[in-house]
Image (cartoon, rainbow, N blue to C red; front, side, top):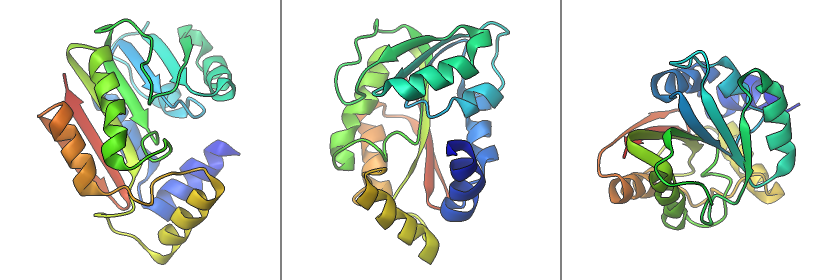
Amino acid sequence: MYDPMVFRFNLPFGWRCPERRLLDLYDRCVSARHLDVGVGTGRLLQECRYPSATPEITLMDVYSNPLDYAAKRLERYRPRTHLADALEPWGLPPASFDSVGMVNLLGCVQGAMPEKTIVLEHARTALAPGGVVFGATVLAGGVSHTRLSRRMLKVGNRRGAYCNLGDNLEDLEAGLEQVFGRYELEVQGAVALFSARA
């Protein structure tokens, strides 16, 4: 049910950010040596365009079920899987990826947005020089909300699916500035889409 719920309802109707915007982000930023953190079902990795016919893909998540599901979905690429908490040291070789994707990750990890900056720092460590980190996250503040999206925020946080009631655009921008200096940040509905280079 994840794909229909997230990509056909939550994103276009709740958060007002169509899947195509996320795919465009992947198409622009994904590399032939890619690490994806918080993999969901692997749908975006399945649909995006890689710069190589044989990309090296590593999947990282704190839970084994999404890792197994996404790895099965992407089996033609023979992805590696890595079980780790994004808030802790990742245990991956430094400077070993040319892109790190984190869509719908920051809004799900515990803590306030300034504390979540550690995730960006871990991503920078994993990136080779010139590599790019990119992602998207639903924010509670600094973005446009509707009655439906505010209700979805409250329900999602109450159920533990999200931890983003305190997340706002200003703090996300400050985190990107602190860790990377140069970055791109745009808002689509209630979603912030970002990219930054090591």
